Image (cartoon, rainbow, N blue to C red; front, side):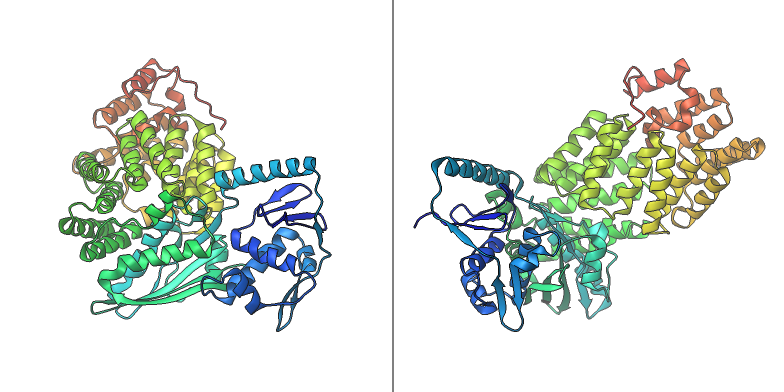
Length: 598
């Protein structure tokens, strides 16, 4: 068969090379979308009924009519960003579609044109292999739990498992579990998809009945609300792994993903073959995502039960390590005890499976707490290399880059995390913290206010906003922001020290000193970050007392001390020789060039 090249308007369509050009520039189309366009172009002027199009393009498998509707939408979008695409592909009511433009088949192409065209095609092909075109974006919502309320964990757990699988595909951007867990009973998938700014939503319901699991799953295109694919599963619970494999594979097929061999392997990868261990793992993930002190305790217990049933369950060890890391942040166990649990679990996880991005990300957080800057950076880089779609690692790495003064890289990294998950509260709050540490205080205030616009009750953003208000002298607003954070962060000693700093800066010296004495008394029976006490002394301009507290913080390995390299609140101490000596003791070198402008 000869070369089949068609021209219409500013476009050229080469069916041999499967490429669409506009004014010589290649346009990215998914394979099935290209096939639909090719059929329409080859039959230009004729009404193609929907059944005929489905038969020609999807002859090898049954698909919903929604697949065709989505393809037509993609074609129109490619042919015209305004409504001009409508003029090429017309909808004929109750019949089908017609390609209405004048089409000319190019039969005589001189050798120079062929060489030029083939060069363009090679560039397009290389680009497809390297970049695979524009990424699809998808949100996997928690499956609605039908039946007993104590099975609620299974809906979020299955969604989390599918997110983990799909996030291994480089041509698909998947919203992480932390962003979708809020969509509970009664959510509308289209509304959720628009909120999450994704093209696709995977939604469904789950029911456990004795030893069986019933799943209903649907993949919806958000823009035109078309159903792309739907299926029901009714299997024994022991077949849950096969069901998840089938769902993830069909989602990839529906999105026309061209999988590499490695991606196919990761899509089918199972971390355990024991359904009971998996059930405990799902419960652990469910409670870990709730991020309260009590839920962390329950998460730890469930991950430990999963490990007891399957001692080779690497993902469960990673979950256990993460649970201890979050729990330790509430200062309810000593730092040394927390680190011991995290270290043991995370190293076991990586011993069993060196491919887990989750494990390397937790290791990065642990090494940061231990002031092992090189080890932390290597761990975060390993996490990102293993899963480009895992924003948690990018956020942790951005924070590490920020506290070590590498602000240009830090802002690049947090921007990448926000591209993957633009509505994440932690991602937005970390950007605000980086702006604060970079002395861009007004921008930091704006960023924290934007974060609170997403969730006005997000305590961390209120707390960090207080820092930024303090930095620009808006003390009453800072106090209000710190007070607003009490509901979510009640009991943490840093809150009291922040208010004491405001007292000191406002001239209420005796009140600030009284708070320090109270924090000292509390430290006798529980962990109080001595770094926070040093910050109050800084506000009081008592530098000798501040350095004494900093030395104590170093001796006790206060994890908050890692902020000292860039923290604006200790700027008054930086010219003192004792400050440089402290940096060197922490393996931070004062001659390092710290760019505070980002």
